[in-house]
Image (cartoon, rainbow, N blue to C red; front, side, top):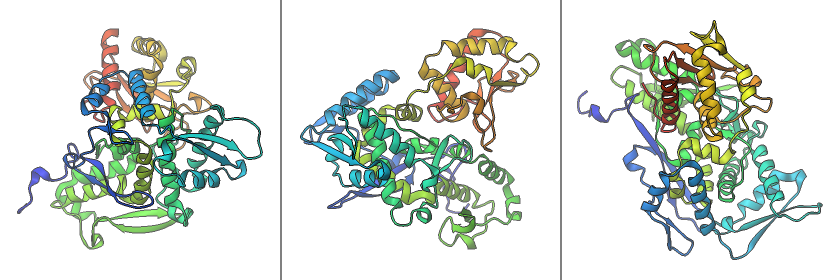
Length: 455
């Protein structure tokens, strides 16, 4: 109303934001400040330069690499990393197993950005053995497992997927002296793991992979983080003028270590009532707080550490699902275990795996390569990870076992398969032909990597 341009106001279906990192000059360690901006303001470099300033990859090189297959993208990425590597000298990392994290943080954080790209050689103090690759792999395995351990206080299990980790908003309370140093360290480890082709022992929530790639985040990303919160905001959005009767203001309540804390979403938010007129701004401020504000300082350091190792344009060839696969590796998927621990509901409740469409589904999935199987898992469960005990222990958003579920729906309900990651469920329409089932499933999985749903 008034002088407000409604075309620029927040819209739950269309508005998107990308992470912008403005670097600050520093003599010792590069600083920066992160923010959420509209896509046209989130411009990054379009070429990759070497240590001497020479161009290693142009915009057209990066654009061409984006069109490659996943395996070819990896080859191009690793080839470019090898050209970025600093070959003058090596870095010896001396680590005590009993003080793994302490020694590792001290060693990695003492390195300059140039040294982060030199060859690292690991030695566990008090042990024999030369590092010809095995000790490096072991270090990445041990350190990534330790840094994602919720008991450290830096990460928490996601509300919607217990296999995915999100940043702990209370990390400053759990690690009051050095939590930001730890996140800078984590960013450097993640970046170096990609640089070296090593795997990380931990999956993050989806929107963090998007932030690392500077991909757009939207209102729908809140659903993957906390579906209950997402649904409550959606209900408010649908209330219109009646929202004034709810008694909501521009604040958020955080539970930190059992204590509730009220946070202003905007300056003076506690004194501003949410009405129909300012409802779009309220939902926008909630999105900004949930996807950045509540963990802004931690995410800022994680990104700075990550980009200490890798130039930002180098990652532009991947989508966020590919980035998770690159970091965590393709899972070992046992088809017999997957099929054995799948439940059938809706139109498939009576016949279960013997229903013709379900038979087609498993025939099609069995023909997928490991990458496409992993993408199907990402589509339905929210992550490519498979529990250590197999599909029998797949968990839902409440922490209880929720097996992979194929839910039958009629074609007038939806034409393409759709997913409910909180419940590990795929809605699979009653297709009349196998070819249609195969085509629509492939499209649904592929479109999921763009961040947009098919309606």
